[in-house]
Image (cartoon, rainbow, N blue to C red; front, side, top):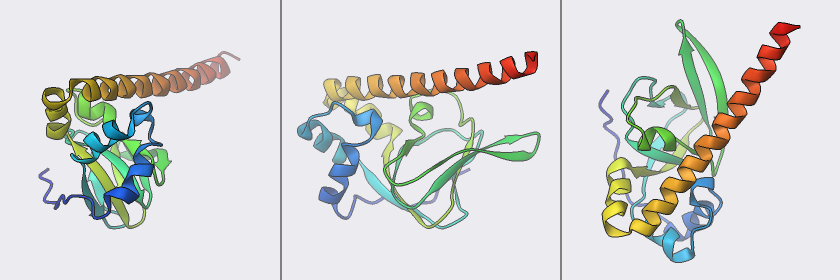
Length: 165
């Protein structure tokens, strides 16, 4: 699917800076490092009910919710199952953006939503222009992926234990 969205520089970068400092994949960044990332960010909007990306599509961006809500759903045997819902300040799509596999779930705006995005190209550009920022970002994304995997393992163990009873 081709994304025909218009990605513009954020209208109010100073308003976004405090949001960035609270995102798990940007923890430990200095203000200068946050500004390095901020310079590469773009803004995009989605209306209620619009897909941001669909399960199976190639990942293109890391997303941060500036305004609105997004739910992540997975299609299991043609039945949509909601995995999680995110609000302002939450980041999603980051593990897909650094991976080589298609999205394992879909993201849908559940209300009018403004997103701050970092494209894969901008992410890879950080590797060339600021390897320290790039390395810290990738490390934080890996940590976030490990936290999510740990939570998933706990859920699976809970269900496995319940089946044994």
